[in-house]
Image 1 (tube, rainbow, N blue to C red):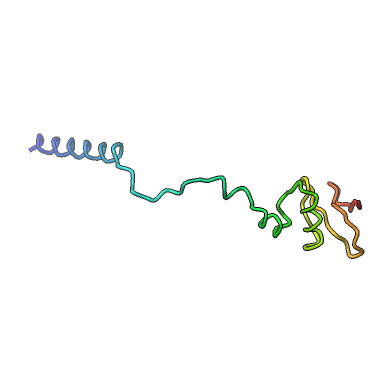
Image 2 (image 1 turned 180 degrees about the horizontal axis):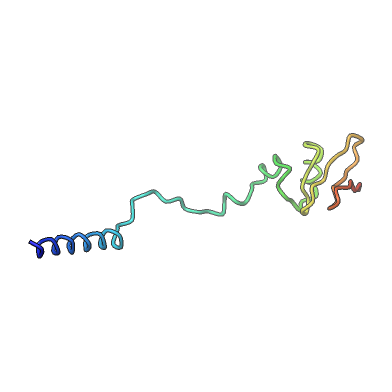
Length: 96
């Protein structure tokens, strides 16, 4: 009787081992990563003033359209007096 019990436990442990280590991957649909989604189109850049740009003409268009634009890492704003400024590290307005 004890030999049968040992045999059943042994088979059970082998099945657990096989199940844990030789499990087939699930047939899940995988998303393929593409860099196309990371690079904004010209239309997206024109419609979003928070996207950094190095294009001066696009920067001017966004300043007129939205009142702010990010250019070369700085966000520029248009004041109520139509003056262009950015905020310094200390939080002061620096007019251009």
